[in-house]
Image (cartoon, rainbow, N blue to C red; front, side):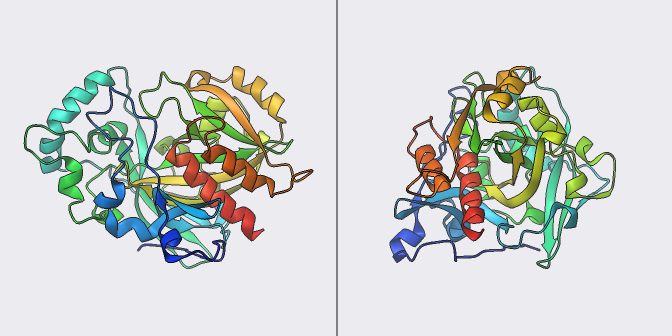
Length: 354
């Protein structure tokens, strides 16, 4: 079942052209990864024309920016609490099919050399989403991190006259349904935080990262692991260890975050429909205190710098959250990545409905 909680009340009354939106390409491409995955994918509307109407749009100075993220759950209006979102975990670990593995084998062999230091782990693969407006159920199963490499990171490898994996799987201009997808579809996690002194926390990713290095990202980004479910076959989303990445990247404790809520779930077109979970929350720390925590974080190296945009309601002519988003889009603080733009689109929608 595909759950799509769409609303148009937050959008201005634009013309048909502006409702379509101006397509935004990806960012953060690295020369090493480029032969395997086109992280810019500037022609994504041509590749996925049947998904355009379902993509997130970010209002920006009288126009709508079309983001390559297909919305499958919008929780900014319904606001289903994490306690009413169930996550089921199947016993069987997903494996890519033999035909898929054969086609991906040459690319994956080369990619493994590039990621020679990578260690395998088990993520949670999103198989389906069900909901009735008052509750949600996310059906998942374990999946190998290496299957994520084999599928989502090898989509654009081209050898001689053979079709790429993207051309083979998505030849009809749309994504496969989650239930039918041959890809790993492990869930990504993105957390947008506001500090105690009303600063939107933005992560400037290290240029040393092969994947989307040197771009602006949400406050915390990573993935949801099987271990985050603590061995349970079914659990409330609020009982998942959703702050593991925050502890590793920012050095904060679980008690530092309050008002944690689901903004929505998307499928990123650049990585062939990879599910991305977007959350928002508030910090007990002020921005300068957060920087001190980050400096002692285990995975501090992944972030070159923490950057901040004020969302303080005082002495601003325009709504501060709109001003903050404009500055991000305009690259005042650096080049924004698609996950940050998607998080901001959902966050703005939430702020507008408050």
